[in-house]
Every structure is written in C-alpha cells, then in structure tokens.
Length: 182
Length: 183
Image (tube, rainbow over all chains, first blue to last red; front, side):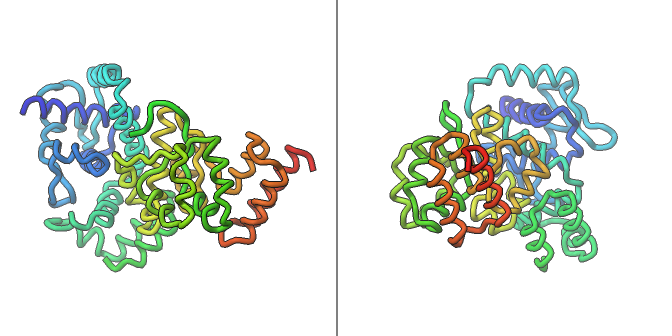
C-alpha cells in the first residue's frame, strides 16, 4: 500500500514539474489527473476517480496533495488553493526524469502531462468543471454545483462565450455547446 | 506504442480520404507513404478504413497506428463530438507528443477548427502545420517527390473534387510551385 501512495505522490510531482508554473487550483490537479486516467487506464486503477460533488474526484489523490507521506517537502498548497513545486520537489522531479529517460511509457506520460498542463491550466475553475460535465456527463450524478454552473442559462452562455473568446474551444464545439439544452 | 526511431507525419483523415476517395488517386498517396513515415491513432484509422481503396495502402509498412494510448481523450473537451469522431483532437495530441520527442515531421490539418486551436494554443507547433494542398506543394518544391506537372495536376483534381479547400490556398500553393521551380 505504501508503495502505491508513493507512486501517487510521484504523479503529483510529475504533474507539477511538467511546466514551470504552479497548478492554479486543487480542482485543476483533480481534473488534470482525471484526464490522464482517461488516456492511460492503469492510472484510474491507481487513483479510483468517483462521482462526487464537483465532478470526478479521487480521495487518494486529495490525500496525496494535502497530506503527502513520502515526499513531505516536495510541494505545497498555497493560501490561494494553488499547488506549487518546492525546490526539494524540483530535485525529486529531475531525479525521476533522469531515472526513466529511456522508458518509452514514461516519455509519453510526461509529454501527455505537459500538453494537459498547457491547455487545462488556461481554464478557470468554472470553465474546467463545465467542460468536464459536458464531456463526461456520467459524473453529473451527486453534483451539488451542476444546476447552477451548467443549467443556469446566463452563466452557461458566459462560460461558453469566454471559452470561445480564449480560443480554447473550436467553433463547432462552441455551436454544439450553445445549442445543447443541458 | 510509438516506434523507437524515425520521424513521423501526422495527418487528419481528410488527407488520406482526399487521395483514396475524393480524387481517387491512391498511387499519389503510395508515393508519399514510400517516402515518409505516417502515424495515426485509432479514430483516424477507423475513418480511412471505410474507404474502399484503403486496401491499396494498408500493407505499405509506413503507417503506424498507435493504439495502446487513448490520445483522443486529452483534447476531447475542446472539440465537438463530430470533430472527435473524425479524430481531429487525437491527431493534434499525437503530433504534440511526437514533437516533444523531436520525432514530428509534419502535422497535416485541413479543418479550420483544429487549425485555429493549434494557432491559438500550441504556437510552437505552427512551423510543422500544413494542409493537404500545402503538403502536395512541399512534396514538389521541397522534397522533389512529385514533379511540377504532376503536382499541378493533383491540385487541379483536388480543386474539382469534393475536397474542401479555398481558392486562396490553391492559388498560393500554385504560386509557390511556380516560383520555386520556375514558370
């Protein structure tokens, strides 16, 4: 069990180290690792994402972020709910990359994390959750924010328009979302 | 898994379908397949398998189908259902991953939506991005794979087919072919 929790913390470090910036919020950590689990199903086995109040949620990931046991000084949740990689964490990240630089799975994993960070970090908390609900509607169950975020017409239109303005969704996706009567 | 060596072209399904179906000239695609290595994911592979002429290219050994990783999920929230079914998000993600490995030769994207997404969010990929018509031009004046007369004929065939491309792009590529190789 402790080996698995160590691996989970390593994934958090790898996600953080993929770019030189903090992850905007803990919600971003949750959803970005969730997206990674959709690409590589063995990651779902590691984190066990479930339907929850704010979309897919992993209690195991939350514990790894809030209360790391193996890498205690690798990262830190700020008062603004962002997650930053500490200098010790950067050393651990560099070591992990060095140890696995010939591993094709790891190379693909790191490139996937970089792409996820590049795109998903640009989303606000609401935009992120909105898109998750619109893409993975099975996670609407148990939500306590869905009606106000996705079904509220005014809020919905504002989010979709912002996403389009930022160039984060294609024109086809914009039209699909605007026409959808979620 | 992505092979250990080689650089790859990642193209959307429109590229393959252009030659297999729209202009019904799989021999041109075969020429390209013999010159370059192509990589694709499951969705693009499924799309082009629907073409009856697909069997003429399936055993060239120069198409790699990366099926062990579900690339289509990375960008799925940002593309429409139709775009995702065609594999547009999948090939953008695959191209980005190959770029990260320094193994991307070209990204061939024809639809405006995915092209705009790359332009706005993945600017480091722009030097690699082209369209089908642009790639035909480059096969002529850069790699000299296609002779000038043949290239211009291909562009004419594309222009008169159901393949969607603007006159502006066609004119630009014709001009480049003539400028680089002499009128």
